[in-house]
Length: 347
Image (cartoon, rainbow, N blue to C red; front, top):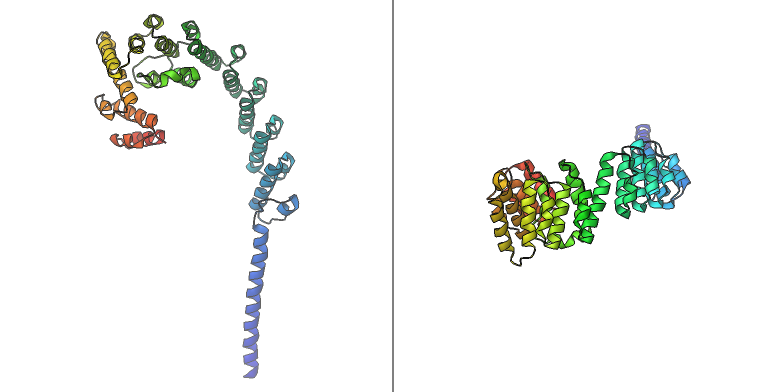
């Protein structure tokens, strides 16, 4: 009986020792698994879990700006490591170490655009190089650089943006004729957006007519050149500039906007615009819709959106939400997908 008790006691002790050993082993292992916030190559390579080891090496490489350390990381982690160091050091040579070709191009482009280095863009390869060159040319405002862009789309966008900005800065409509007149909405919206970001456009941002929104309206032809002429006409308060506008709707609206520029009462301006729409013939309803949209956006009056056709109402509410960064305008939209898009633009 005594032997049995001793045997049971020995088993209990054995279990206790094993449990303690397991706990101590786990604590020891845990000390190896924790990723140090800062450390050395030796401390990183001692980590047992591969992910932790690579994360540690990545942190170390970025902290020390030592690209060679990234080479000890396998998989996508190495590319991310090289990308971060390249961007922090503005060293495009580090980009060449990235194995993913798309990420390599993105790496080069981000550095070239940040530094305004036109020549660097070419090493990104097409179709990325042309976009990079156009962005740099616009950034440094050098028209001569646009001519060297091989992709015709970005060549046109580049020259159009720079000429459009010059037209507004100098208030000279002569530059507008060098802005593309293509009716493609994607091209028009891209150019208009960039021109409207210039300081020269600032006086028009609080104007009664938010003309940059017109390009997004359905069944409306509004080109970047129209935008340029209308902007200059408004700045000058000179409706004769509108004679150069080629699209019927745009000409009517350009004239109304130029005339209203010299008026002090905003409501009277809208009345004048709507009167001009009455003589627009086949474009009359489209004109009314555009003026109503502009008035709603300028005044923040959601009631005006409700007077538009059902198809235009969500666009109107979304425009108010994004303009005033107020998501409550989105509550007027019943379609859930359109409402979600509205909410995203209000942030």
